[in-house]
Amino acid sequence: PTINQEADSFIGWRESLSAIPTINQLQERANMFRQEELKKCTRKLSQNDNFSDRELEAVERLSRGIVNKMLHGPMSHLRRAESVEKKQAALSELSSMFRLDDEAGGRGRGRRRR
Image (cartoon, rainbow, N blue to C red):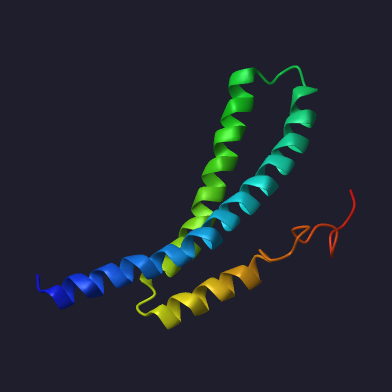
């Protein structure tokens, strides 16, 4: 590789680091929602004597799998961004879609009480 190719590669790597905070926020937000919903679900399921700890763990694994699959598309979209401008636009879109800049995480707005 030439010096220019190495420099381009380094610049691309450095620019990719800008996505890390957004990716972390997205993963934390999704996991927070997962844990909240899982807590409600396991509370109800554990009241039923028919559910074992092993089955409750299976529900936990299921919830993690769903979250991971839901996040795969947005993460892949970020990785495929071809230019710095496209990556920044994708980061901005993800931040807006998932309300990552919202301090309270969008809680309470537009949600039904159960």
